[in-house]
Amino acid sequence: MKFKALGITAAAAAFALASSVSAAPEIGQPAPDFSVVDTAGQVHSLSDFAGQTVVLEWTNHDCPFVIKHYGPGNMQEQQRMARNEHDAVWLTVISSRPGTQGHVSPEQADELTRSRNAFPTAVLLDESGDMGRAYDARVTPHMYIIDGDGILRYMGGIDSNPSANPADIPGATQYVVAALTAMANGQDIDPAVTRPYGCTVKY
Image 1 (cartoon, helix red, strand yellow):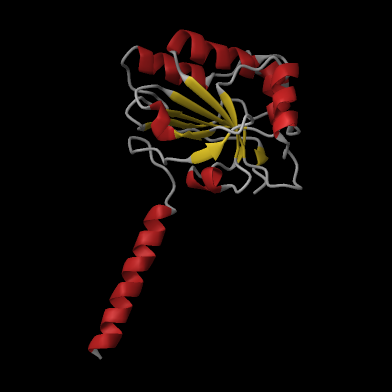
Image 2 (image 1 turned 180 degrees about the vertical axis):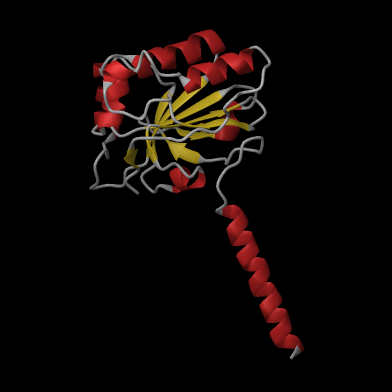
């Protein structure tokens, strides 16, 4: 009976550990670390950017909601604002598995960056989906902001209007811009969690 009880306890502990590892990220808590290769073959980890604000953008170039923000240049404008005005690192993440919508080769990803005049620090190719699942990234675009201490400060949508129409951008609250501005001013981000909208990530 003792052996059986110990077995149950060990199993319960293992389950608890597995549950904690797979738990969704939380505002005010350390963001999940990652090690993902970019289009140049360089591996990036969150710990590499200690002391810097990091913006994560999940993307799928064929998604109408991504096209909404890249077509008129809204996403590119925010990338430049984040990097130039806030000295932030901007990582665009592709978690589409091979053979699914949005999956691209490193060369195709680089061509998309050039052709759209995008301005990320790097494009990460998360083919395994491990990074996306760690962040509970569900749609494209899904946005996250991490402060210099590695604490998750914002997660959710890029803005407040969940349509695929670019004409709706000017009237929407730009959540990522507002969050970065609040951080720069030493203010609390409100809201710090919003509903993301877009196409499902193709794990």
